[in-house]
Length: 303
Image (cartoon, rainbow, N blue to C red; front, side, top):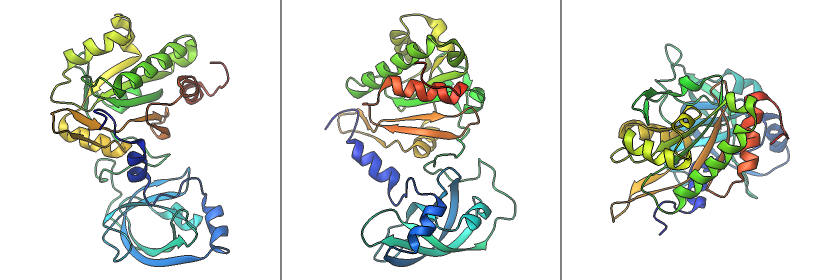
């Protein structure tokens, strides 16, 4: 098995299981009028919602002969009800599964209970973020030993990825691609000033700030001033689990003491919400740099 990266398909299947990508509520509503479905009753707690895709994440128990207990993602077929839902709501509804395949829809949703007070971001259980959800404020420490959270970069387009500095295979590939993105943005002064790159270690036990500084300098041509635009950070083990859950990163120690993990790169907009994600390490640095520039300054086509 590849030391640093499992099959990208594993990350995709786990991250997007039960997810309906790309259908708006209007499209889903129209589809229910023509498609044939199997139906299953469900109950659960809303963990998150995406206005971008009109999807919700629901923490739900086992549905006999259909689903294990899991955090499932559904496209709703009722835009008005979707807008009313908030994290923490207890709901009931019907899962519609197209008999010819496709994303699960959620229909007939009713709110069975609401939290006494609206949940704060810290009170919402960790879950895979949908497009348009706000990235969690998880404490980290950078290569200089300084505390960092996503709030530090609010107002900038933030591109982040996850690596292990001891990895010899896929992590150097992803970090080299980040280096290319960094170089492309550097030639676009406005986009460079309005963006930030962040490499997150998935090895808190070994990737101390001095280790991350040494690792980062290799890709910054030894210029420590480059850390102002490209930071290398590490959370605690407990906070790493929360952060990895939020971005769909799967990791675990291997039998030989290494760390096996999937590769995920994410773009967080200046407003702190997730805008795009890329799985694996074969994405095009130029296209990603253009996405960062667009998020940062609202322009395309210059890079």
